[in-house]
Image: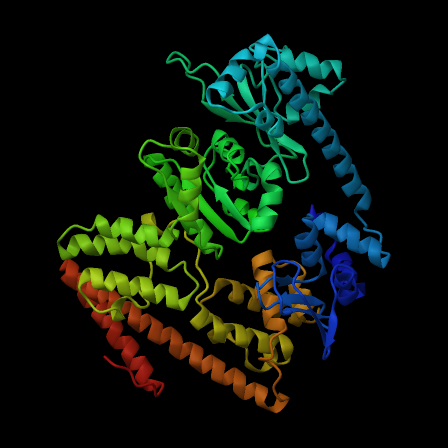
Length: 594
């Protein structure tokens, strides 16, 4: 919906808004030079580290790294969508959104969909109380799910009839087209009539953080071998339900998430319900799909810490292995609870009690620690077998943003291989596509720091673009985010649109806004103008040297592995590449150990 609002309108809102006045409505700000300082509203602190710059139109917390422009502040603080934040700020500065009528029309349609789903949720809850819902209530009773928990999660039951819900919605004058769009009913192939999508199932309403019913998840009640229907089915994609961006249990967990800033991610709906009943009210589940990047980014609006708790079977381990790189790539360092074989959170609590589960959660190790120990225990005895296990771990380690963490893990792997850690210090992920697919490049602080400084200099002194920017600059930038920003900035500048931090922050995602706001409010660029050109040239030279040295260290690691695997053809190729890199470094006047 954000795309419905013209960019020039968004720019005008940001030009008119006084960000210090806006944020001052929510917290106490004190003057700090040309900027303002206060206690951060996004994390607990005693010493103010939250900065607001009226001239740049941005905020940044140097304690938790939260940052952005006025849109980002409202979205984060009030959990608003971008259009909602835009409307609120537009009203504040007296701007009428050009697409307000279109937005209102869409909002009206969505409100109707929410109302229809609320009708359906009420219907399922009422059926649950009747003889038609006895099998669903018996299922929950056997699992000791209390009436209070049933009410908390608005659990219900669908009937075995083909048109039970259809007839109910008809009695409420719900348009058939709307029910079809929501996936509550389906049209028969011959087009003669419709039938209920959810039949004879335990019903779980999927509720967003505002308490609106987005859709439903249904568990079959007939588990006989003859029943080939899926165990769980979820609502189809609709104008208000997108399964890859929502989670089950969010509404019920919202307050706990805000208080603890931590969540427990489990696989199933019943697992969520069980943990909530046992007092672990910060549990949610990804609704029958593998955890997605969108879900992680959405949940990061509520929490800082993740705990993974998947089933103690092969499927649970696969779910963990899929989820971990996604979380690491988004800058999170989750802990993991590995349940005993054959157990899931629900069965574990029923068998061992809530105290045992609470103990597991409190003692949960860091997921990376667990992963390393797991793979090294599978290592075998020959150098080749050990190298194979190390190669499985390296892609995960390279997701870590901390240099210290990466080095610590790689040192541990080096000891395992009986080698020194030098060849592992910058070892890249395996180039085998089957192993790297789905891994996004993670920013490497020791390299990106120079890239960010260079980028900040160009934004602060855009005239440098005409004097020094060429293709060589882009070739030496390894961080895709910074490279894209460079190219975007050049386009802005050369089109005559100007270039500023405020402009770049206007459409940056949350995690990127934190980086930009931190750069904008740093003192790195407060240098005399006559020294800027030399500073740029120094950055460019050092970046080129770093890239070459990084490549050299990578080749050293790959050569070591090629020697272990006894692959002479690959070894000769790598040695030739290393010789060329060493020659280039020497031509630049950079000594290097061969």
